[in-house]
Length: 382
Image 1 (cartoon, rainbow, N blue to C red):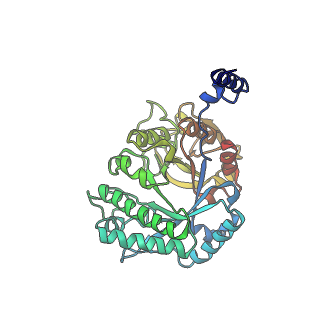
Image 2 (cartoon, rainbow, N blue to C red):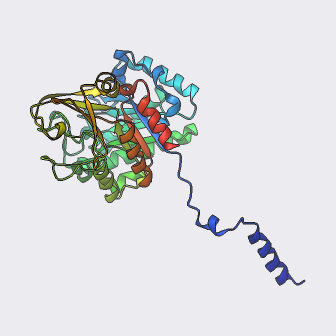
Image 3 (cartoon, helix red, strand yellow):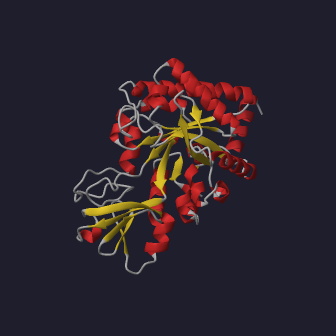
């Protein structure tokens, strides 16, 4: 048998084993493990929900909210009476769960006022970045999460904002990424950089999403609070899709937020979509449409735990589920409650998978002390 025949015969035998089958050729690459990140708020400790109560084995990341930016543009503790003990307890969680990553989240709604100054010049960016590294290392975090609410416009009226925030935010993230990589090389460790960003069109317009993604490990979209006590009418605060043409007010959704980021050239595989573990209770002044799109006299936030204990099991309330928005609400003739439950989370998880997003984020962990929604998320990703 000549060499050519030997080669042909070998190829035939190899193909017959199935190792080089058409199915193997067509197989898609496996996605990375889904991110399931939760925000733990420092003030949770005041009500007794300290970090040891977190079901950390069900999470991949915990972001600690919040550290603040001081007048010197350096990061400092936001709750110095609670933070040191909370930080120690987070470290203990990591000892039990070596794969868990923790991040210090800086800013938030209350403490975003100095971001514009921190991002303004190269010197300011360096000072801020160096302080982030120092804080992260001192308290044992695996990375930095920036929650700037918001560049250019929005947030508290006392916040300082500038048109240049748009490009300066990109430069700030670049400086942070470089500092984290330099420190990581020295420590032989990969440090994380993430952000929490808005789901509305203004945030997309006021940031360079097509550029900043290369500096980030992932970004969390705050796909909730589309509606709330600041509105004129009752509505869903985290609808998966817009609820239809019957709404009397502007509509946005989980879907419009995600698509807005993707259409702005932020890669889907770096997007983590936010899921709220709380809802809103409205005292309505109208009684049509089973409480939906009615005017109201007052409204307040409620944790999922409170909603399930006091309202879901209350026979005076009836549960509805919107066929387009894919979210539930409760109604008793005068009170309307918008919230999440296992059914709405199922639909959101199906959406996350269909869009091939990086995963899901929880705001915030203390609102689901029994772990019902967290269990639904974890099981849904299996």
